[in-house]
Length: 362
Image (cartoon, rainbow, N blue to C red; front, side, top):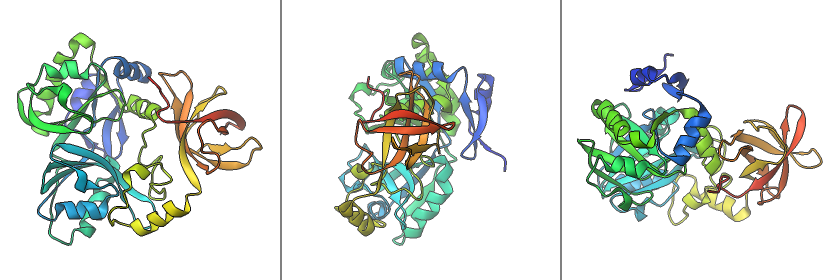
């Protein structure tokens, strides 16, 4: 199966982007080095083209009811211009996907889902759409740029009359940016470095990209690949679907109790409420290596006596901290902060310590 191309594919190739298949799309993994790109975002500003993400529009008088039925968080708390992180629980105790829900209006919601799950999520939501909610899959119509880093506001402010410093975290506006109308300017991101995500119609994508780079030139703005996106999100302890959360991980095991609201009924809520009451047997934790070594997904986690207690789900060398870091599931009892655990790296047990998130403390 050939990977789909995002709108600016040729532009990324011309910028020296190393293109790799990711979630069914041809995506830039890096342009220079992961470390340089990572530090650029932490210290100044960089731009990710994450146009592979999926976007669904749900409209009509029953739109909120449908969202309440399929998602774990309480979307009734949203007001216009607000976004919410949530997940779609499945009927077996796991997670179909994690997503962001944007309230555009009382009867209009914009859902942003992971690229690898576009079809799966669409089918899942459709299955529960018994009340005639109008659903539109806009995934092939939108490009998405994540302009991230401490200088993101200063760079983007040149392109819009909207006061960007007034857009609070997890809120958004639809307004003019870089001469283009109706850009969704969202104070969200996957880096912990601050900044915005810009949803733009494909036809305007190249024009906006070029204007953003002109505006950010004084800050040394760079295009950033998926490699640095992964190290940035890992330093923050943000989950990646397919690694840290899957069809078989419960939101409560994954530390997503904060987006699992039992004030309403939703898919599998009764079983999850029972799980909350009885407690889970494993927990997703962040950890920092004490011994030298780089943890990787699927490495075994053991206790001091060498007994298996879990598995690494994501791991890397942290560019900001200069040590190995990771996320993984461990048996309850080993999940508290400061617990010592051992990662099996090439037949060696290397010591690590369970650490409260974010792993990278500014």
